[in-house]
Length: 130
Image (cartoon, rainbow, N blue to C red; front, top):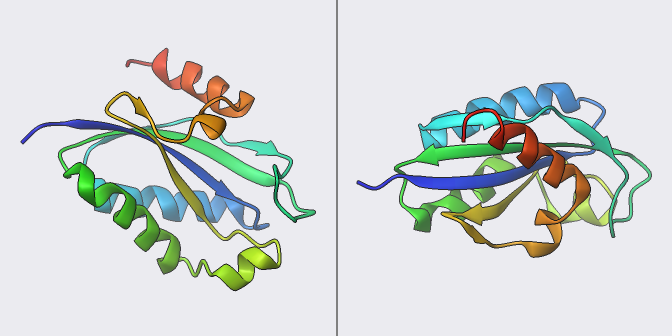
């Protein structure tokens, strides 16, 4: 099996962000079963989203043997397990947002990839052993 490198953006605007991030870390570990490195969480203002609440964002780099075709479905499943719904999003509530930003060197979400907090997180993680 070949190893794949995923960059995943994690975001939540719940007041319980610390618990959400811990739960997410456990779920990502169970789903991808690979080496994972997490950036320091940062607070950001919402971007193009109807919310008054700040977001807590984090980046994770995962190296995994899970086939690439399963990456996005696994992320969506984890979001749903935490109770993410379209209705909440319409009200400005994001329990958990998991975005596959890059897969094996291919940028999948250019706008998010170029955000300052993602750039800073990449620098933090890539300098830590990539």
